[in-house]
Amino acid sequence: MRRLGPMLALLAASCGSARERDEQGLRAANAAYDRAIVAGDRAALERILAPDYVYITAEATIRDRAGTIAQLTSGRVRIRSSGSEDVRVRWLGRVAVVTGRFNGEVTAGGRTFPHSERYTSLWTRGDDGWHLRHEHASTPSVGVVDEQQ
Image 1 (cartoon, rainbow, N blue to C red):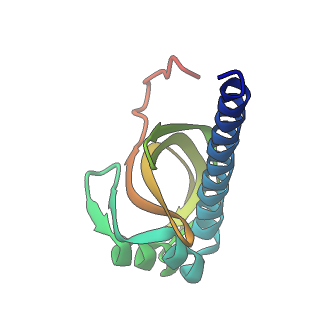
Image 2 (image 1 turned 30 degrees about the horizontal axis):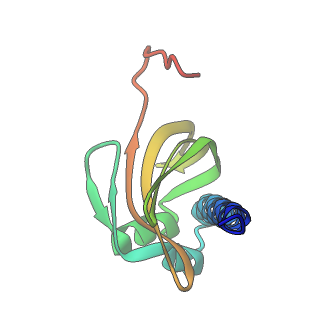
C-alpha cells in the first residue's frame, strides 16, 4: 500500500504535464490560425479548419469551411495585422473551448480600419493535431465598456 502513494503521485504529475502539453499545442494552433488569417494561407487554413467547421460571424451570418477559406484567401477582404489577446482555455474532456480577443487591421472596399472582436472557438485534437470545429465572433458596441479589461 505504501508504494501506491508514489505511483499515484507520478501518475498525477504525468497527467498534469500531458494537459499542459495539450494546452501548449492548442495555443500554438490558435496562434497558427491567426497567422494563416493574416497571410491568407489556404493550405494552413485547410489543415486547421475541420471539415465540418462552422463560423457564426458578428453579423449573425453562418459560414462553412469552404466559405471561410474563400473569404480569407480571395483578397477582397484583407486582414493586414492581427493577434489574439486574453486567450483562455477551458477543457470539456477531450474538447477545448478557447475564448479571446482578436485585434487587427482590415482592408475592405478600399478602406483600412481597425477591427476588434471577442471570439469563442471549439477545438478538437486528432491524430494529426488540433482542428478548429466551431467559432463565434462578437464585436463590441460603440460606447460599451468591457469591465474585464
